[in-house]
Length: 619
Image (tube, rainbow, N blue to C red; front, side, top):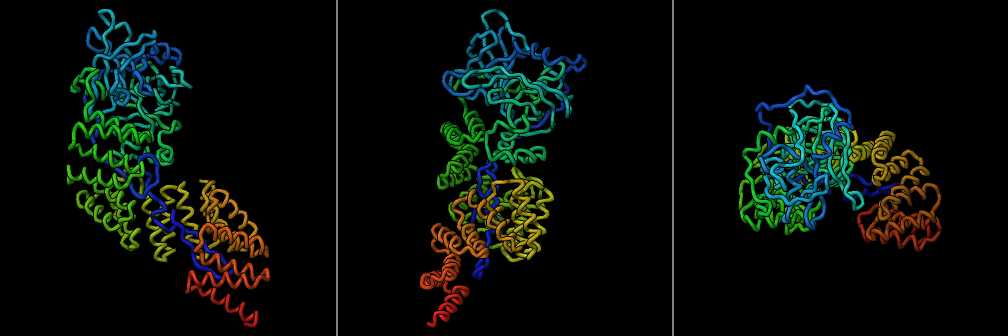
């Protein structure tokens, strides 16, 4: 985050403000911090309206009965040497073969796909059907006899699933190098239409490796294929340029700082109806056939959703090798390169995506982000303008345009862009309007319009009450308005939400200092420094609090530390001089005042302090 301090007279403090819009960037695919939202074009999904055969007249079974009913039909999917595993389950299929339904992302491997059944038999897959628009796959293998010896599971009517319904998820996961079959209960928490067919959410405590396993209702019928966590769905929607439903906004935003987290609140499954309706349109390929460019692209997206960017890059590269004009794969390559900190290379990839597909609005958008990272703000603005020209109602592009304009110091224009993003408010991808309201407030703060900034921050908090950065920024605005008690309350709310927020502790200390509570202010600055040891402004203001308490020797040590971190810190040099003057070390004090003036010739405080000291010394 950028640091902004204000010039003050001796005995006062400078305070750090978060009025820089770049302090509140959009998390990129899993929470890395950056200034922009990322999205990509991709194939959408929709629910078919065909009527399916299902039976909900069965009597509910106990968890033990359901577990016993399905355990023989759940399988482990693995590869020869590739790490990780997936799960699947038997369904009715063609005569003479065994048919396993699973998640598509569990089958994306260049190696021979293998299936282990409950009787410890290991089978080589003979064919695979990978659904193009849904995260589903059907794997077949040939049994030893004329028919499949393993029972298939009955499919229920997923259209009849309701929020609150009891469900059970089964599958395999790796526990300390040992594969364990897992059967866990949960309740349906949401019904929606999300990327790649995901539509039923539940709060079962699943683990990695269970993807592709069955989700059973209370009668033992399978109503969904388990697949991903809410974070992964969130990131996939972002990557594919699809809006994030409100059901994910409340959870995945907060969790996405740790991509691939196993502690996601919701898990998601694909309704069985999508499998039944779309199966006939999915071609069958040999299990040993090479992966297609689309397969590698989907593999790259899967790795990206898990935060495995080096592996994602390798997958996108293979997709491009097979299909050089694959714009989405170039886009994915650019994204992975960006996440790996290779901004110039990422820019080249986005340029290639645009070369292949000139109207690729999302590539223009992300090209703008790469240019921002390279400090080429004017070029970034031009790129975002092009994205908006192609896709005028893209709230994210308007939001990112506001960030770019702020980087250019054009705060009024930035506010206009944020206003447009808020007005559209229907395609936010991985953000909601709270972020535009916050950054609108930061831009207003840059213009000195603190009351209006406060109004924007209040609006952001109304939308997202646990937005700790906004509580901190709100405190900054209140400080500028001289409302120190209210500022203190805002900083404390930010700390309550995020106890390790060094900036909130810093601003709490500032507000306490303005209220004359110097000992408490000192404690806050100490906490800020504990969290962020190289926080020059916190060391500086710690010194001021110590000066106010008459502890000049300790204050001097704090100013020295601030200067060590930031040698051109003119105001620290000035207040260092004041501490030395109070310690009657006059020549050293003069040297400090002169250093402050050398660094900042317009520092009137240092000029006056030097003049008064010279008069005091009769010089």
